Image 1 (cartoon, rainbow, N blue to C red):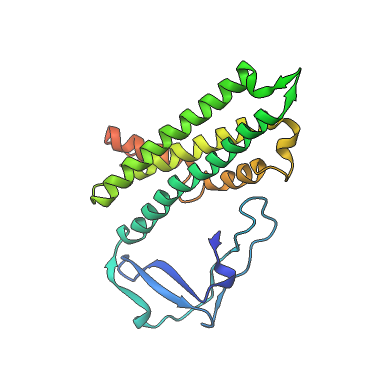
Image 2: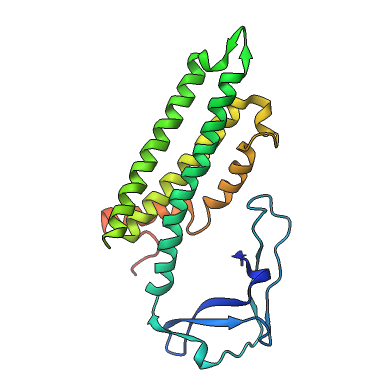
Length: 228
């Protein structure tokens, strides 16, 4: 479920267990009997993305379609790390766009004879927004340095993904308040970012799961399941 580009893909990379219970990657091709990709409709978030399912009904995949160089859970999790790292940067861009729009609007919107940017509560919102964006930029920049050195851990990537998405959502909501009623219109980018971020906070690992990944990293205890 919820597979990006599935309705238009020619190939799908699928991870599945073999008879021994070992996870392998394999390439499933458009046109294979029993392989269909129905599209998901009615989305109110990430609407520009073609999303759907991968449905397998007794699909036969030849052995040459197995990915040869990696097996086990580490292979798909390595893909997740790359996606989560990209998200950590991408949501900073959404936050920056919301902040920029709010800053410009606050300087143009005149209330009681002066721009609302001149009022203390508006300045508080804007100052906190740029502070949180800057903190997220430094966090992700340092993570990128570690990644280039081959030292970035999955747990560090989870922390950045969770922190930055949460930051971006909060900034989008604050920016919407600065815009007032205009913030819900298509004239400004706020609601588009806010609705998209509602998907981002749950995809590639939910907000709560990333919290538990950090918790396991710092305590050494897994909260995902009992050891019994």
